[in-house]
Image: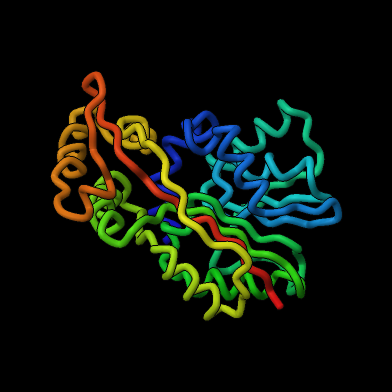
Length: 251
């Protein structure tokens, strides 16, 4: 996993500091609200990327560690942290499947827009369970959707990002988390109107391939098309895209 992820994200790390999704104040407020941070919390943001979620949580908690596989992503996170003068966040190079932390180290484990890259998701959730204290929360925000739309957009994800593995439906997320020993507290889907081109080019897809990938989105039929709702606006493709938002607790 690490080789694919680093290859995909190292050249485009700076794009994620200002990404219309990853850095959106509205979407970050959504993550903070879902996480329900408490002042004494010690937080682990897994696959933190350029640290957007970690930095959004920092004012609400005692300490945050952002962990990522890609040094270039963490360099961007460190730069932004210094620019903002934030003192309770640190950055660690590491893998979600082999967390370099002792048992019961954290109150909150969060991973946002990242678990669809995890080759061994079950192992990552086992590690989350291990490093959380009793009563600790796991929070996931990741690409998802109704099954038909998920299956169709999966074709696009694989072509835009070779490190993509699989988006889970909400039911699949609930099953995985319960199997890892967590009790679900909140689980829902949220759809967004999705501007196709920035999503594709953010990961470094060449301009001459954008329309070929757009054609896949627009080729959806039946229930998938009804769910995705592809539409051209002023020549640009828009469609629906979903995320699963889940919070669960370690008993």
